Amino acid sequence: ARRRKLRLPPGNYGLPFIGETLQLISAYKTENPEPFMDERVGRFGPIFTTHVFGEATVFSADPEANRFILQNEGKLFESSYPSSISNLLGKHSLLLMKGSLHKRMHSLTMSFANSSIIKDHLLVDIDRLIRLNLDSWTGHVFLMDEAKKITFALTMKQLMSYDPCDWTESLRKEYLLVIEGFFTIPLPFFSTTYNTAIKGKVVEALRLVVRKRREESERGDRKNDMLGALLDEEGGGGGFSDEEIVDFLVALLVAGYETTSTIMTLAVKFLTENPLALGQLKEEQERIRAKKGELEALTWSDYKSMPFTQCVVNESLRVGNIIGGIFRRTTADVHLRGYVIPKGWKVFASFRAVHMNDDHFKDARTFNPWRWQGDGGVACPPPGVFTPFGGGQRLCPGYEIARVSISVFLHHLVTQFSWTPAEEDKLLFFPTTRTQKKYPIYVEKYSEMRHVKSKERIVKEEEEDGSKNFGVL
Ligand code: HEM
Figure (cartoon, rainbow, N blue to C red):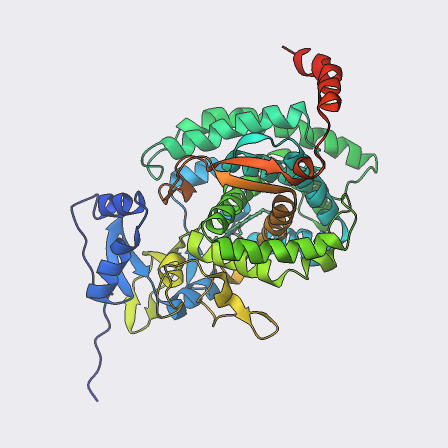
């Protein structure tokens, strides 16, 4: 038999140094970034080589290869983030940890956010905090901004037991500066020092929280949140410094903030554009609400009886591609689907390319939640085909919390409000997936439509409320 010569995947390196970076970026700045992958997959096949962000990189648009990459984390591959992202996250974040420390901390985070914990106590707060946010909606709302407030409130509660207050709101504003500063730099992969300066304030605020909680914990006062778990972990032989704990918390905040809030926004956008799907989801949610009192919180069994909503969440994750793929570096020569990738090379497993491929999802580029309807539940595609939360040792520890938060949000939104888009808004994918105008909508609350009040009553209430509304000005 002829010996097959092992070789690098075929591809183009583009211009010296910048390679094909500009082509990649300009594709992702449009509503339809697919051609960048399509052209290369068409010419070279689903595994090809390119040169982006200063380095030769093997791209995979192949579900089996993606699965192999995810499953061999820590063996043949390790996660590899550009220095700008490492700076943003801090080196003690879960995303940047490696080896046995990563294993231990990943499972600690997973166990903190697993379904029995959500069922047990996180769900009540998720329900309450989402409702609290929606209570303030009137008239014109930027959905993306509200979704971000919600996500921040949920995360602050889950990480360190803080309810929304002036302090959390000012922390959120500082935090926004960090994140927005980071993502408005045109080439985030090259930026370095800018973020560290503003990040300082967020870090400083959290350091005070950690110090206080450490004292409380030493006095035996323990709280049942992520920070509590990190402080307790010390007993397990770890002994994290305040610095390490703060880094760890900030990275959880970063990882969950944009992702969850963007999916909330996109799900609403997709539903608005698909009245049939919205109608079916609304019917499902109204059926659940009809069995409960108006103010009663959703329970785990309510959450488990929303199959169509789960189809909508899946489909929003599939089409939204919040995390388009993951970067890795080979730690040995890797044989992959007939090619060899040398040790030390960069690899990008594109989830987006698989999610948007007609071979794996019929009419992949249309939003169709019904495609997820399986026999008696939500369909489950073959391994490597649907990976919005990654997989393997770095599977997103927030995946269940994210799904629950989005579902609870959709429940309260559709049972309490009707809405119309205030402006046309479109999707962009660079530097992150988002809508251009933060998805502005006009909302109307059903309860206000149902119980039409008498005019005198409204005038009287306004008089009573007057001092409250204007007192602060
Ligand atoms: C829709 C929402 C979300 C999406 C689409 C998402 C997606 C992902 C993906 C694809 C990864 C894998 C990264 C890799 O392999 O390099 C990941 C990791 C991670 N996610 Fe999420 N995520 C979401 C929400 C959250 C939330 C709410 C949290 C916070 C609890 C969170 C925390 C993390 C952390 C800490 C990691 C790093 C895990 C590790 O490296 O071991 N994510 N996420």
